[in-house]
Length: 73
Image 1 (cartoon, one colour):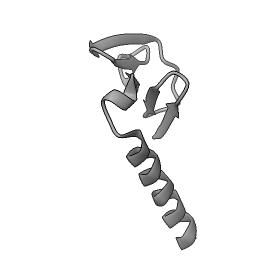
Image 2 (tube, rainbow, N blue to C red):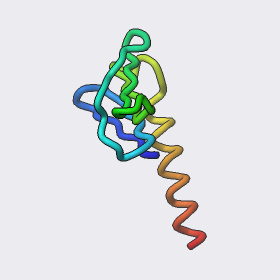
Image 3 (cartoon, one colour):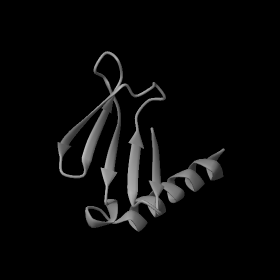
Image 4 (cartoon, rainbow, N blue to C red):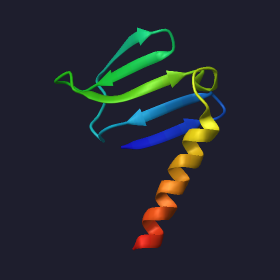
């Protein structure tokens, strides 16, 4: 899983697999589900992300998780 935040467009993308997205469906305002050819979820796009979630908390948590894994190795 990979989480990317694009500050210039205030969009958060949560990628579950590196398969190519073939279809998009807006599930609710600002939340778009990307699926592959078979209908499996590839990722979730959250537009205007900072109005829905605390971006700094997500980024900080991920950095801490990465650093903890690296310090164990």
